[in-house]
Length: 312
Image (cartoon, rainbow, N blue to C red; front, side):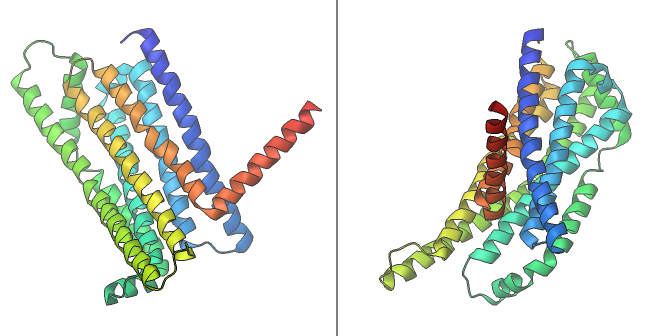
């Protein structure tokens, strides 16, 4: 990979990182200030804040991996450092998916209209259950992030560093196959919370369809608050689903690229694409939440006012 290509990818990655930190830090700061001011915090704000913190950590891990790959590639031969990076990347990756799934479920339970006893019970209990659910997601993500054996990781990194352009030894073939299986299994585990988000999305569509039919039967064609809430929630969920699909594919490319030639270029391109999801989805959440949107407008107005005063 040429120096110009490395520099371009690093500049893009740094730009995405900066935007992601700005958006997620804004979400966390607004919710924390509101918590301090009112002495209480809503369930939706707990989810937003947890998601923002996990995404800030994910952004830091991805950018750190980019810098290590470009500036200090020899670190890839050190099992200890790479085990730490692998652990935190897997942890933050799963935390992001689980917290976003919690947000999708929360939207579904609060907005959808069903009369099944289980749905009504969950709708009634969801506010008190949110802190425990988030802690459970944290514990599960930590547990999932641990399985890669130390000796297998060390042997694999050694094989990667040597860049076997000739025939691989039997030991390296076995280690690569085992490492690939473990990584693939860990990645596939994120499909479960993703599937839950997908189900929540389709149930929201069903709820909106039933609500629209009731309005038509009652001869009311105007949009009401319930319909607006349905549409807003669907926008938030579908944006997560689409961005996560792009992120997931990029993450798989970056992970599997250790078994391909020109590893550095493929990994960096995959990581640059992966940065789009945690960087951009925060702004979609800000625009879709009244409190965050109003806070962002106040900040923009103050910035605009200060710039005008400075010009004068």
